[in-house]
Length: 101
Image (cartoon, rainbow, N blue to C red):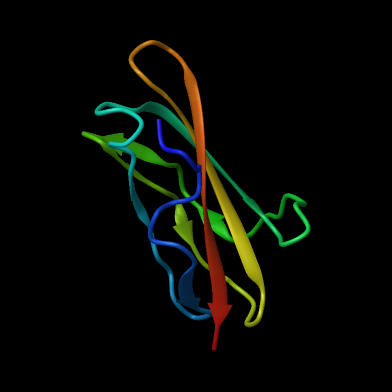
């Protein structure tokens, strides 16, 4: 398992008018993730709605997150994702995304 749970690419940036279904490579955890789930949080750790659309999917060693949209400029979002490995262990990672104009 990786030493840290944040994606290795660091903080990502996304324009407030963009809609992106981010793809996360979890090969450092497992080659075949299943049952992915996702939640969005604000910089204070509170769950927020309206910024994720759709459901996450797993294929090979990647997870495609729900579409991230409707961001506010100057806000940082924490997108947490959970999944199962072949041993049915629940693993969790996250990415940080800054909303930009």
